Image 1 (cartoon, rainbow, N blue to C red):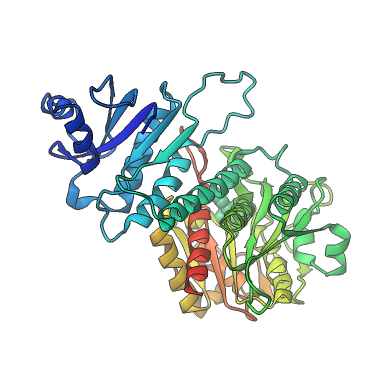
Image 2: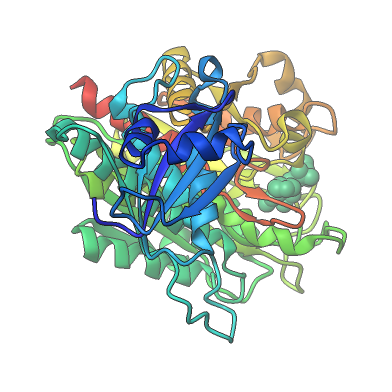
Length: 483
Ligand code: BES
Ligand code: MN
Ligand code: ZN
């Protein structure tokens, strides 16, 4: 293939993949010679860029280490693709062909490798510099192809298309997460949903304060009280299947900034609370991916979005409000606002007669303590739904971990004055938050994803991860394929 760069793999022990061997044959042992000199051992994620390899039409050959052949699983494969793309991203190649889809990945087939190759490449090429004043004029990598030695089948092409669609959806979620709260406001999220609706011919409805008042969404409205930015309830519908198929409703927490309200957060790292709309971002990203894949499923996104601010009119600890469900809530801590906006959105979701409702939220710091940035916390009132989500997360390499929702924990959110309190103390903080939500999810199969630890990365490489768009998209793909 004519390209600026061909990417092939080398296992630990300097063992070449079939594609690497093919190049080596054309180059009359050139690669084998280089490997013998010890420049690349084949350790996972290491790379070596070669110019002027004889016998090839490509300008460059990039060797990427795959680690031990018998240890090559999903994680290693995705890491190798990512390492290759990162090595190319800042180099001189404008396009590249990656020949890794035919290596044997444990328990996976070629379709999986193509799907994940495309998705992992998109994940690794993502950059967010639209808010830098100096524009980068270097051309850089603009196109990545996945190469096969034989002729691609229709299934191969479909797998790549789906991987690219997932990459785009995840990229949208990252963009929304990375945008600061002075740009990414509730109104901005509503505009994004409307733009998606235009692009993919979806139905979009944006409810404003008055509508929410009519619906008696007392919990959601309580959170927005201290803010000057108007709250919205976004409803975005993708109908890829017939009317007889009940929809999956995705409810995304859309707090565009969480100061904590009157229960103000400490200032250190408070900037990270711009990611508190990541649940909302993942709903928009997932619907975008599903629509681009034209999956035969029905999905409805419901996004309660507002800011959580202190202010003269803000809710105060001890205030009691009536949620849309009629249940009263004693707001003991105004920083536990996510569950307040979500509970009314869950009640609102009943009208869609859903097959299942999944809410996605950066809900608790306690979940970060429990699972870190590795796994999303999964709670559900339906075991089959939980298993399907766990399996989707495993397959997409965007893993979740099943947490308990036992009645014993409900004790912690009792209130002497109202039906429930909005906090349950420090022990099991992620679980009691889920318990709170469960009170509003009795009428349907429901799952809750606490993504406080997985939606973004802190530290030097800080930024949105776009999780759990891969898990959710895979969940919808599996539903579509079952039919
Ligand atoms: N948005 C936060 C949760 C969060 C914390 C996300 C850290 C990401 C990183 C949420 O609204 C919150 O403030 N939760 C409180 C609940 C507490 C007051 C019961 C928390 O986790 O501290
Ligand atoms: Mn909060
Ligand atoms: Zn929050």
